[in-house]
Length: 348
Image (cartoon, rainbow, N blue to C red; front, side, top):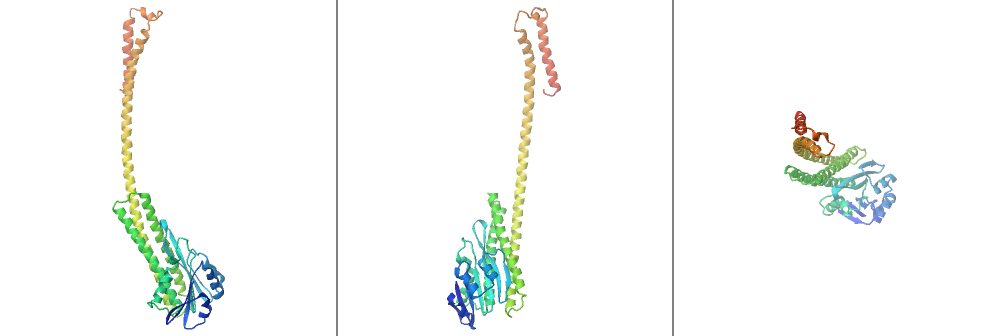
């Protein structure tokens, strides 16, 4: 937990035990930057600042969507910043801001174990570095919150910039015909799309919150313009995400068209192969018919010859005077009859 007193002379670091005394000073305001997992955070929020129990609960637990609630003496704003994870996963880095008269409390988290504390604190660290270098001066808590929220939108834009580089790379693969693994390529496409959609949702919801916040009564004179500027920053991020998402959708549509044409060509080739196989099978069947027909024609005389060639004693045909010419006539007649039958059926 970091405790700072910000005055016209600069920024001064203090211990958590000094917060109650620092709040009584009129020469500056207090900035407390804490982690939700820090066991001291709950005590500071509940006992030192005496925030509403629901506000403390929101700060210590994970919130899946941005939100804003105006209490009597403090405004709670819950925001998210994106962080790239493995396999296209987007970590939602939560930042809770308690904005009040003479103080600003920022609470980070809870965060995924895969995200380091330094990553979760990157926005506040960036502003703290600027304050320490005297490149930025904050005259009030709301001015400091404006700078921190501006860092949130800057990181959202940086995420979109990285996603844009991925979109261009994927587009070059499609247009250059260098997609070797369609399934992996489609997974990459939809991972980038998921990231853009996540940032777009963060910015859209946060912009709506700051639009409402700018119209709250009782804001300091400098507060409304700063809050309005933050709302415009979120609107810009949403528009950037929408533009890149539409551009990526064009890449997806183009690739789907390529796949459709490719599948159509493949189907056409398969149909041609099937047609050729069908023709070959038909021709083969015709040849089988011819061979079978001639085999039957030659089998009939062979059958007659085989019967009369058995030479059994009690075969009356063997003693006929016309037996021999009759057998020859029977052989020729059976062959001619079969030939006529097969010819009529177009087997020959």
